[in-house]
Length: 477
Ligand SMILES: Cc1ncc(COP(=O)(O)O)c(C=O)c1O
Image 1 (cartoon, protein in one colour):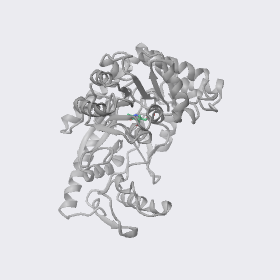
Image 2 (spheres, protein in one colour; image 1 turned 180 degrees about the vertical axis):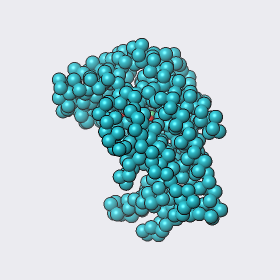
Image 3 (spheres, helix red, strand yellow; image 1 turned 90 degrees about the vertical axis):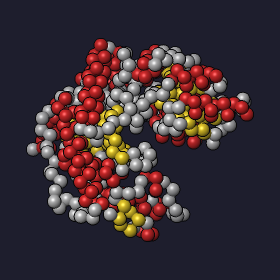
Image 4 (tube, helix red, strand yellow; image 1 turned 90 degrees about the horizontal axis):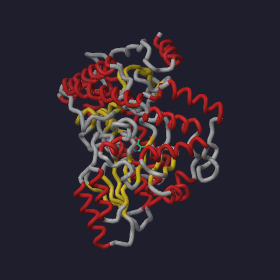
């Protein structure tokens, strides 16, 4: 299973993790990154490098994809984040095309200068009103919004009290802002309280930012936001909640977990992304009072020193908000939730465990990285796209497949996905057993049971643009 690479490092296709290559030894920065590449290559050679893929003609519920080695495969797509299927919504497509005709394609400047358009200004107002605030500011990506809200507000002498599982954009924003970072145990309000009390026992001069997410994307679970907000008030801290995964697709009117927990307009600062539900790149920060918005504009570097969102993206997100707030939005959310429940229940029926509460993220428990990688190896030829998540994104030994559900997945797609994933897991369990008892190696593992050729997806994907369907058929031919 192992190869010995440059400098004696051991490269193991079923072992090791990204973390091993984060801090590489050696004075030459360009030479030392080779160790990571060697590990990737070992995994590629064994067929267990599932990252860096692309779709051939768009991220729809069935898709043709290409590995980073250039191999084509196709199948049901549970690896793209387009929760309400707005990527193929006719009004969204029409808005994008018309906006490009009217405005050109480029924002051509930072929001601090002249990069905003009438569309992005209108979108800021729309977001603020939707969430019950009077002000919002748009960032080029959700990552930039998460990083930027923290880096913009926090001084080096301030403190950050953050859920230990917070997204990388929040963690990296915190690291860039201060050394005073205190992680509290995931979703445990009492451990957040302990951290706040300890800080305030000795420091009443500096600010504290309390940071969490409304829906955690590896566990599909949710904190008690009213309790965290009360805690923030009690200790003169400021609460920021990242609503990237639930805004638009959960809650009676699409306002997400904050709506479900009756906290609309009551959280100090809300930050989010458009990349999951709003069919676009981009992110935002919403808060009360123009002062916060103005401060973000000039002191949050990803807003100040980066180009504003393109006019087409601003128009797409604006149209997405209109759909989400309309009766059609409610229907799409119902369809999505129906799909989520069906997927979770069929997975359970096959004896597979899923994490957390029903949301568009359905994470399927795998456990060992070896089993997860060998399962992932079988998915392309079985006709399925799903993302493998492993350490350090989740704890060691808790690898999982993250399935992301769309409103326009058909029941057929869901049944196919469950069948294909459970088949891959059953076969991978046999692979693991053969490797463990020495009857096979990674090089010989397919001798008795070759991976099948990938089945072409010939039927039209409902809702996908006609040209995309035509291109897929011609590829399958
Ligand atoms: C919780 C959370 N916040 C922020 C982001 C970043 O969003 P974007 O993709 O818009 O940069 C993500 C995306 O992975 C996320 O999961």
